[in-house]
Image (cartoon, one colour):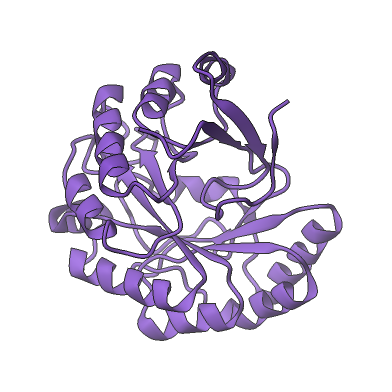
Length: 290
């Protein structure tokens, strides 16, 4: 079952760059990441630097930015010192601002909304044991739900991200996460898939099988039929995985393989290209594929 007869292919680079406000630093030692993914982001560790870089991006034709960074010991990106810079960027440019927030407290959720943030990308976890054993913080699913609710109340669009197989490649809590999210006002749901990353505690585990990924996506499509479903950038680069996701009801794929595009066209899908991250709201920057 699909939302429509389209497949949306998302390409963030170069018009939707990713920024880390902590550089490569993260206070956490999450087993799946180990701050390795921060290395690929543009470092902007001072508010003035963030402002200047965003102005530069806007002048060179960027459509938006992802503002992310490493977590503090409470499990959220320390954005509080960057709020005024974000507000200036929003008021002086046409940039769409997507913030990867983490488990923010209520006051910071409200301040992000006040600053003009357009979208929150929010990692959601559906099992207490995964939060404790993989993320390494003394929080619960209820804490994640509370933070999500605060963000939904404060920011125009919120796109939860579920990492399938986050618990060392095992499926733990994904269905519970879907049950919770099915009752929330979310703008999109992004699926990531665990990648055994060198230099992390999970470098030797196995990724979930494509059929298991497809099963979770199929459940999501049935439980949350009106919300766009995306296969995000952090995943094994596998044509089999992308095809399974597409056949299971995925509407969006970030940086799909060419054979996936060809398969979609053979299935009669109208492939649309969007130069942005796959979490953006419906209708953002859509154009025909070519």
